[in-house]
Length: 329
Ligand code: NAP
Image 1 (cartoon, helix red, strand yellow):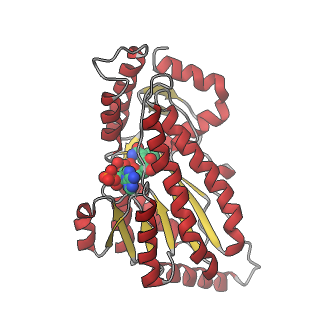
Image 2 (cartoon, helix red, strand yellow):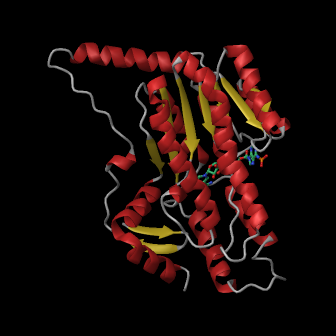
């Protein structure tokens, strides 16, 4: 299979991951003769999941994956609280039946108010989807650490705090689901994206610990790891690069790397094998929430699966060589 990762050509015949980190597929064995009853029970559980009134709270619905997920879930019959820093961006989702709420995941007051609103109406948040996030890209040496800290505040601490706020009511009701939007960038790392990847590696660790901690309370933790998704994400990355180390009037030791990165990023997002629309991620989330036994991890896009496998089985040497060749280093 020929793969282009942020512009890099990888020719590999690696099969798609079927290992345990692709999600724990909990196959249930049923005794012969009980298949019909099992199928019935499963269908019933699925139907209950689909029609249950447990509200879903989603951060970052002004665009991209958050907006597509809110639209898909409300269409599937879920009660959806779609949130954004600027509520006026939620008009289309409100027209579809979502309940709009203001939520800035870097503001304690805003997070407390949003969770309280849902709990006042439903007793608890049934499912929290931690989606808000962005990429602050740049070489490790030259990145503005103030901007990097702000990214961690949203991508990691916002996710962590919102999770802390919804858990007490979930624990009391002994059910609930936390869906964290990680990234293939929490499993593989590209140059220029080091600090962004660090936030997504943090989301992996938090999700892995949390999953085990809250299991006794009947709460599921689901990590979604998208590959390249066409949303506002790429524009935000480019704006950040233009304002930072990649600025034309800035003296940088990494000019060639930055220009190779720009070229490969544009090429990859334009490539239909590498990138897809946010609806693909939304469909995976809907299906996970409709399932009575969701997996712990969902890698979204075939290209992401191939790259994660290349990184996993190829080791540092092969990956580094690939990166150096790709970025002309
Ligand atoms: P997007 O279209 O830029 O959406 C990002 C959302 O996060 C926007 O609604 C944005 O709201 C919101 N947000 C940013 N800071 C926030 C804050 N402090 N409080 C609340 N909301 C905030 O990009 P996207 O691709 O849908 O990104 C969604 C998630 O997917 C992110 O966690 C991202 O890391 C992850 N992801 C994206 C890709 C990709 O290639 N696109 C791949 C893997 C993972 P504003 O409009 O107010 O800024």
